[in-house]
Image 1: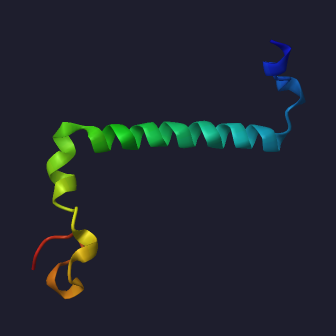
Image 2 (image 1 turned 60 degrees about the vertical axis):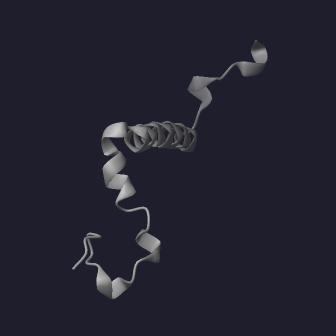
Length: 66
């Protein structure tokens, strides 16, 4: 178990910034996954699934047809 031991008192500010950034990134990814895989949001994401194939002049900035 000594292998997994962390000396929290010896961590520098850069170490803490890295820990906080990693935890925040993990939480943000979980939030995005919940939003994407929520069946309630399926229609909104399905409406945008061909966004990269659309002609620029045919659609406005929000993705709605002109």
